Length: 331
Image (cartoon, rainbow, N blue to C red):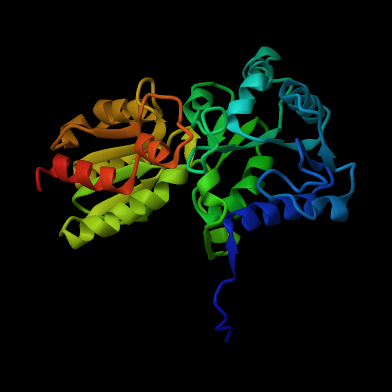
């Protein structure tokens, strides 16, 4: 009998292992982006891969997001399986034309003759005092676009196994890695324990209220659920995992059990993903609700640099606890 416990690794190491496995398994897979080679990636995800796979498959690019994302699209059309790393979501706006007008539309505009099996990884979110040009959460912008699939792995297991699922998809997949997750550590389960990439996951069972979130806000929601439990409140925590498509069935199923919801979204409130989820609940589970859906989003300001202001601008554990109690009508 094997009594060994699962090996632990960090979120950063999990993505590294996923990339390494993909390149070992499929010679069509290669990584390209700014500083992914000699430097090992802005967040250290690709350290050592250049030595193992060489410059043909680990490609440092110029500081031109439109250029190298476009090159990735071309490589995907040519039969390769490129993984393109964009240093931060803010910089991806320089490649918005390539992602939205090209990668997302080619299958449709070619009548299904061509597909773009491209994976784009990018860091997102705030918390590291990187100021307004490096700290925003723009996942909702990409989740708005037909032709893209949008993933937000929040756990070490998802960081380890979602990449391989994305690489098997014939269409472009955008993966958002929250900057505050890279140092998190946890045991790694086997690949067959990881849910399909388009399915939401119940990370904690509960009966009184559902906390719906994704990405970097998941640890805060889980911590808030622990705090609420000490107050006698049973909070269910739902991790969306996929932002496009959204797993409406799991959302509605959870609401049908708890009858109350708080949505935690690091994007801005106006035009937010939280607003879309709230609309789904209203359209599909209105008669299950015992209270209005509540939303906790970032303050509508560019993310500040000073630590105390950055913290004040973002959804925090205390906000989640207080809002859940308000929805439940308790002090």
